[in-house]
Length: 318
Image 1 (cartoon, one colour):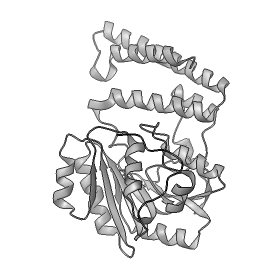
Image 2 (tube, helix red, strand yellow):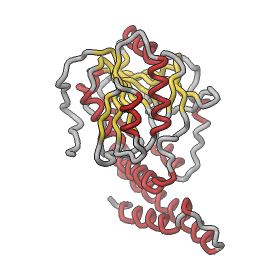
Image 3 (cartoon, helix red, strand yellow):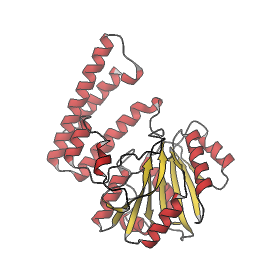
Image 4 (cartoon, helix red, strand yellow):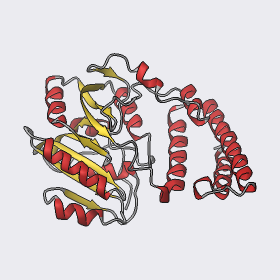
């Protein structure tokens, strides 16, 4: 399927509903079914639709959704098109005044989308709104509400970044204007999509919401963090699938490089690519040591670390 153009998008269908909820799935049948059940249980007082875009799951996700949730629209892809591209398919099919993006490994515990819709109606200055996120114990999860700097990226590449520090930096837990929100659950105005365009499909996994927020702010749009309602996040169950761990790492690496090239200077691109190479070399050395001790496992693959190192060598001067 030909990638959708980022800019110049116009909806072909009229607005008919308050909210369209778009969920991208890939081999997440059970957690997706729980997510859909929570939406059905807790969402009332607004008109809405749910659109599931399935990226060629092999666990009979499509059949299970079709059997249990007749009102859910399912878009079935023949291959895994990535998170941004799949979300764009949901956007194109949507009929809501606002479009919500929800991870399949989340649960609604209250009427979150009605609260979000009502707040955005009374605060039209906000074009993007992100909810609060809590863990399985209903404790607040750290959310980065500010744009990553190249220095932040350095710490992340070297695995020195501590996400828990974000809790302190988030400040008072109240509705407020921010620079970035979590991609776990956020809502955008339909008009914003026609103004700034669709998600950038060069991001297969991660960075897509960061990119969308930067493009929105560049056009003077405002973003709101809204912790007055929260969704429960099962901490990455949608991406932490051992069978696809290597692909997730590779696609994340490629998405990060693309993000750096789009928003950071040439100097910082060279620095970050070099640090990636150093990080992969250290990982390769550790794997080789484990291999010599005959403690190598599938999750610590010597050949995979070599592949990462070779890839970083090819891209360091791009």
